[in-house]
Image 1 (cartoon, rainbow, N blue to C red):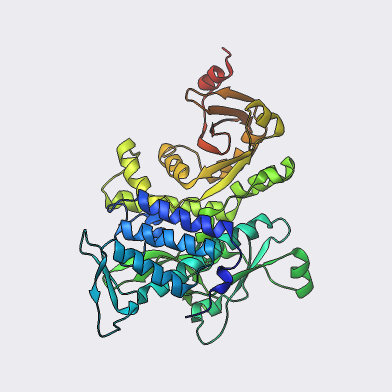
Image 2: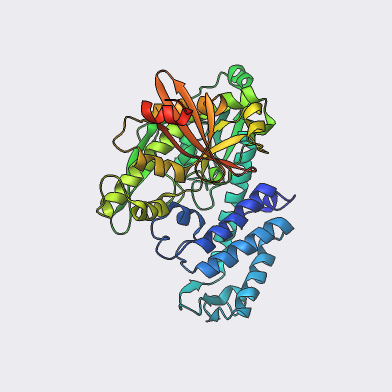
Length: 430
């Protein structure tokens, strides 16, 4: 087994939170939602649908990460835990009479997990993902100083050719390339990301690419049929794809930039770039495509009702969010908020795509959202608790952003253009 000791040294808070969140998410899923949900793909274990066993595995992984427990001890402790719960179904003598020959199965369903040999891949993959989530947070927090990221493959005889082909490629931190190909990009992937500053680019005469033009839809062949994924078109025309289930940025699922640590003008500028950047555009477009595919599969069309939306949203959520804006100090004081960052989640984006269907409301409208939040013409208390409506007229359009202020966290609920009559009513004028 490869050395994973570098993951189990000092207590890495973000990595532990990531593993703990996977355990919590597993508890919230149900069997039906695990079929298609992007969240389920992120937290599920290959060929294992037992939610109880999945939760226990992630709980033990989080404890191993926090306590610095090595793989061998983690495996012995976990198998002993399963034995106490009655999940040991016998031994495979062909493998060993010892722990590696233990056959694990869910006693409630009879579902066979296999032997602890599988635990090595689970351990390494999840520790890699936890490290990636922690590293992504650190890289994003330093993006103002080092905004360029370089893909780095190990380039030995174990490196996948597609990963080696991407070695050395450089993109801005918010390039859509990283939405798909931020490592790990497969089981036991050892690729990493190196952050570079402007001076590094100038000194070494490095080339910064634009990944959006090279991201293409691809039909991944399966044992039965195909599935759609996103591929990267290499300079020689070949297509690089991730392993199945790895075509998303695992770090983004736990990313929490704290814009309160920045001067408010810089934080506002960050949000404006976030809402008009290529990564956000790519994710909105991907959500829209995925949403249409699910609607077609369910024989749905047009604007969805509440029950239909719940069904579609459960299959689309990826648990990531973008910084949609930041409160000015004046607004923060007015609303008695402890924080200033306003988030827009993937779940809100799904609702936006449905409610704005048929309206002249495209991606470019989100580019003004940070201005609506930062310097509104007026803030009106909403009809629901902790809800506020931010009003601002920009270039002849009258925008309303509905904000839910939970004090320690703030979320955008909806964003729209309103007609003159509604606008006058909101302002309290005739």
